[in-house]
Amino acid sequence: MASIRKQVSINVPAGQLWNAVRDVGALHTRLVPGFVTDCRLEDGARVVTFANGVVARELIVDLDDTARRLVWSAVGGRLTHHNASVQVFDEADDEGACRLVWIADLLPHAMAPAIAEMIEQGLQAMKAALESAESSRHNEPPPV
Image 1 (cartoon, rainbow, N blue to C red):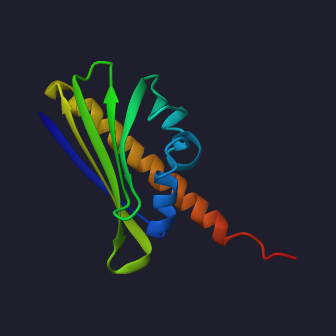
Image 2: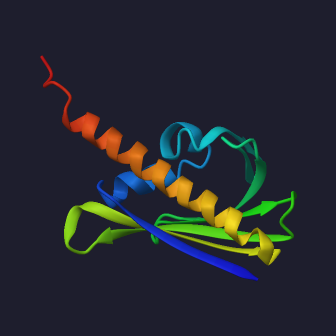
């Protein structure tokens, strides 16, 4: 079984990132716009359309607000096994930044390079979207 572990530091407070992650039906608008082009909710799952045309049905396994951890499992398609999680952590030395860790376990092993590349693209899209939104929020004119 292939196991992929990637992480990224994002210059937003952990609570802000977690708020976007836990909004499981808004991947395409809040968390990874451009990387995901559509996301619709079904009972206990979401159907995700990626920019490369891949469509995946992801069962939501766990959403833990205390641990700031989301777990899902992609079903169907070319993968015979898939389980993934993301977890948000405060950066110890910077209150305005956080770290997201993404772990995916999958079969067949041969799919690992393609999935690792998609995870990397997702992390970069997430960083860009969240940091851009944070920057825009700080550059808004004061209320009149």
